[in-house]
Image (tube, rainbow, N blue to C red; front, side, top):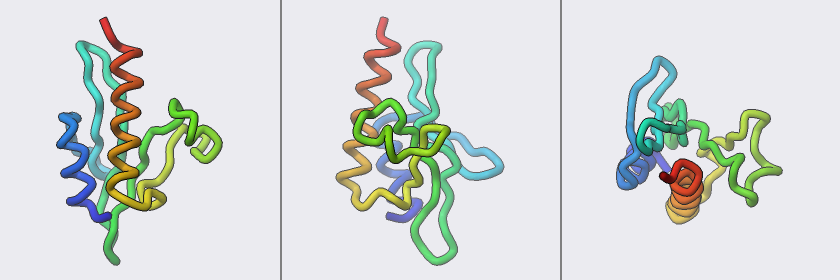
Length: 99
């Protein structure tokens, strides 16, 4: 997937987009609580995109994430897989930050 495809998917879930010097971040926001779900998304010169998706809270990815709890979006094979991850993350944080 390329940068534009990933950006479109993230925005379709009403995640907050903001730019930093190393790329684009997307965060989940509930009241005054937030969590960056995707950080440092940037296009690659040879196509595709790179960025780090926070997945540590999802059982399926606990063993394959970095010490910071991320996987690179390059490791995600399809739009369906990305959408499933994002939906699971949103559900997790909705429950965690619910009022």
